[in-house]
Picture 1 (cartoon, rainbow, N blue to C red):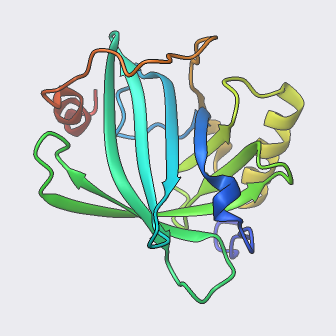
Picture 2 (cartoon, rainbow, N blue to C red; picture 1 turned 90 degrees about the vertical axis):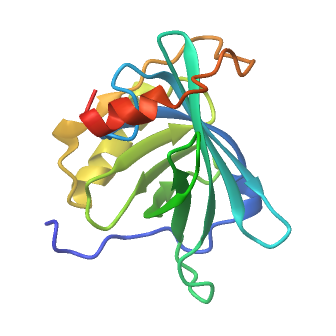
Length: 184
């Protein structure tokens, strides 16, 4: 199943996709704190057609974040295959790290989405709200399974209700990044 080509959304309306998305579930990543909560992404369309990406999470009451840029992998393709570039470490950004960001599914109202990438090592379920109905969650998990993902690796992300409104105290030393290298 993992050898089959993934189905990707075609003709994604980037303007509608912009704004804040809450991480409902994901495959754990060494780039995020293991105890992260209230994880979210905020996308802002820039004049040049690229997207500013702000990923935030809270760990031990502190806000960790990283900013990057997303852009279409192939500007002439109708497929929602994006590249995302971050610079690390976040406190002294010097090393570019680029990854795939493929929109595998989005509902017609742009309220929830399934995001993955071709190696199937990363997967995210995103929603405009901090919580997603169980039935919809199960449908998205099934879509991921149908695309060849090992959905047993999905981890639900704790979200507060209401979510943090302020940026909050920051992890200004980038300690979370060092922890991520050590797998903590």
